[in-house]
Length: 409
Ligand code: C2E
Ligand code: MG
Ligand code: MG
Image (cartoon, rainbow, N blue to C red; front, side, top):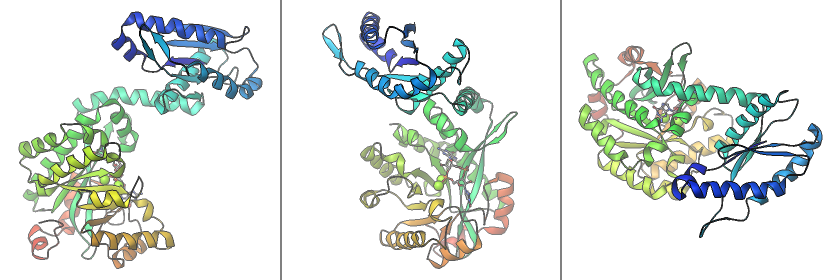
């Protein structure tokens, strides 16, 4: 088992290295009490301790819950450092001989991978090594490195999925969806890298690039006779939490010359749960700029009526989860028809995501849903293909205005 103290760097940086050393000594003392005579305990490096448990594999697996519990007790009481008392935690990774490695180095490497995984899941927890863990970690670390270069190498592209006005069957807006054209890998979907970009902070420059590129593209399309009502861009919770977020949006509008009412930002409902009031304030400011706000993946997070009432949003997007089993699933039927009534009364727009079948389209149309996206009408398309699609399938801006189709004046 390899054990790594959580936030040790922070302790060193804030309290000084002498205190850091004192803490390591005090912890080592406690760990010595914890290990039995047959086990081997070592301080391996920095804030890492390695344990070799002498029990046989299956014995050990049975005993481990108890071992972990005893180990947790080591961290229960605070440590005294000078006048201060601090509580710490440590993340643990476990690899078993011979299943997870035949040599010490293999076991160590795999326990380390498990520890790294535990730390990411929840500092202070523990994890066992598994084969898939190793692959996903290697993949993740490689991706992280390559993401850093992807922006400067211009490897990101925007695909666009039309939003269709169901009664007329025509597109009145599009959603920008990022793709990564990674050398030797091909086109990579956002769910393979966005979470890594969020964790590393790279989502900020990436998200800013998306926003700017989407505006620039949108402003070029009138040259091809395409005048859409809006373009939408997905915004990560990490971007929303940045104190400068509103300023960034404002700057993007200024730099590109984009009119605010043509821009929509999609925010997932989980994004503003962490800092509800702060997010609310920012979304209000965004809407004061004239930019629209849509709640994405509605129903998959912490949807509650309370927040729906207070939410500074123009529309909500029902997640595909509630659409995919329509029209047969009676629960989904009930949810969708309730949402139509609710959003009508709250004067919110409603968009259905992920329509794949004609039966779904018909059902939603009859249920009173005006706007939808889905593979049935169009997949996300690269810009040139989008323009071909729109040339035949969109409603011009004037017609939208005359017929009152625009979701917001
Ligand atoms: P989302 O914003 O909810 O986007 C809808 C996703 O559903 C897209 O996947 C789209 O291709 C897919 N989709 C649309 N219609 C259908 C359908 O009929 N059936 C099925 N099965 N799927 C459909 P995509 O492009 O892979 O994007 C996945 C998610 O990644 C997005 O979900 C969004 O949360 C995130 N994302 C995409 N681009 C960006 C970006 O620029 N910034 C951030 N922060 N997130 C992004
Ligand atoms: Mg979206
Ligand atoms: Mg969605």
